[in-house]
Length: 112
Image (cartoon, rainbow, N blue to C red):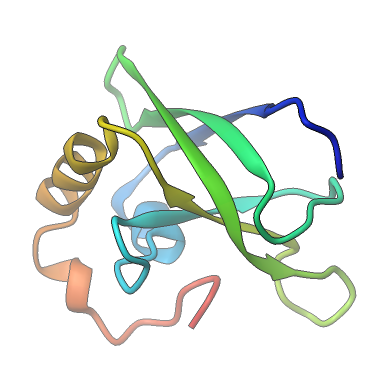
């Protein structure tokens, strides 16, 4: 995807295990893995609407693609999105509060 338009991506995280597998704490400013078969390039700008567990609120957060996992290598295909903008810190705080001690877990994730 190489357009000047931002892609809008809706992501629903249904439980703590899924959040732990998707959260990317090693990315500066926070990030999350988004399963997708759509084609993106590193640096593409996206706009996420993130739903967490049973919360009715969806968190809007802009970001840029910082990781790509291609399909066909026994891993979930998708992109890692680095959070940008002024709402990045609030979504990171909500995710880390939800994860608690799982933030630094050694369980495998979609990216590590």
